[in-house]
Image (cartoon, rainbow, N blue to C red; front, side, top):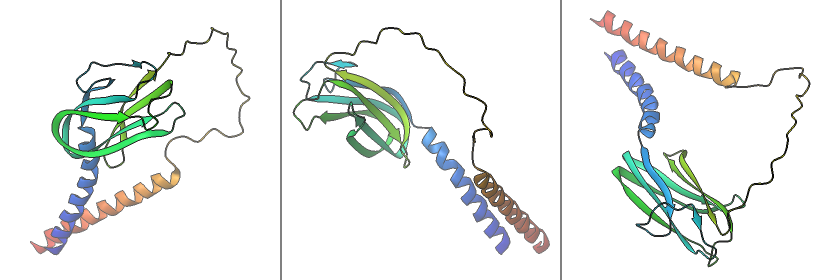
Length: 186
């Protein structure tokens, strides 16, 4: 009987690890955009001198889920970051005021991230001031590099694969052990 209980607990623990990823994947963001007012329409280009913008998003499927809003400045530095837990579905408006009085002209990026690991769920680029014009078209010539002595590594490392395999075998052995104990106890 002890083996059955122990085996059941081990299976429950393994299943809960798998379900954590599923729970994070259920949170959806039907709308995610920037605006110049809390109830304003989506805007991607703000005039020079703008000092406040709003990150607006709608969410569904949250179950006490951490959702993080992050804004990057034109240099790629984090300008704003806020994390709150959300449940159910709803709409959130996050005011992001410039600490310098007005945002400098340039391209900014806002992101919404979900879960404890802050997985990127959506991203929006927006501009303050003049929108940069694309450079003149140029012809690009690509020269293939010479073949390398060894192929580049890709995918999970061998250590990770072996580790997961060992854990999986241990879990299978634990389940077989629990079932055999249950059968012999009957």
